[in-house]
Length: 242
Image (cartoon, rainbow, N blue to C red; front, side, top):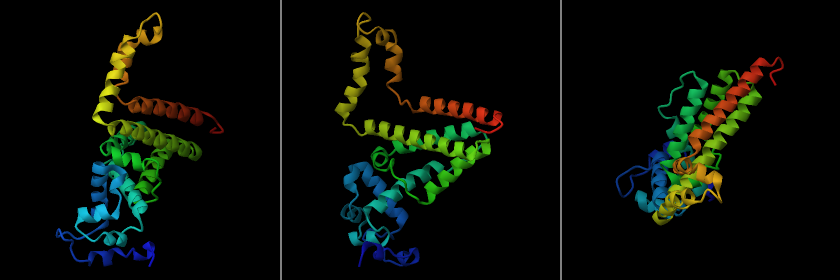
């Protein structure tokens, strides 16, 4: 029997007996456990053996819910997207709504940096991702962007957010020693460069040290939103809409 043939309907899953720990397996429980284990062990957590041990079940039981660990990883990715959407409500102000969604998405990924590194580049095709695509395109089309512009801005918005999430997550998963070195390099190296040899760095040193100690995502997001607003003004003022 192949892995795909072992995946069974949800109703049949719920009729399974509880695990050794007294819990009944579900897709949500497996995904939540996988997300926790990824946070503790990184990519090495995604084995049915580790999951089975954590859930108190026979590892083969995982295949009743997921064909393989890659399908489980896509479910973890979709769970992170769902957490961003949970509790979010549109205000009707497209810039405010995109800003809020972007900052939420970035923060939710950084709350799970190991999972962010594994999932940021994946397309899940699952429920929460589909809802996110529909929501963002709806915001843009509702603001008056023509369809082509709406799709392009959606593309830039999502890729920018996920790229910064992956970049910032990669810093968070460094060893304590490596992270401390990162923090020290700006004030101890750049801030001490001589004006005679590095005039531009020396002139901006205090600002540079402060700026490089935080994520560039909020500023990049504002630049993207400003560019999108300028584009909207242009296409709505143009008779051809181009």
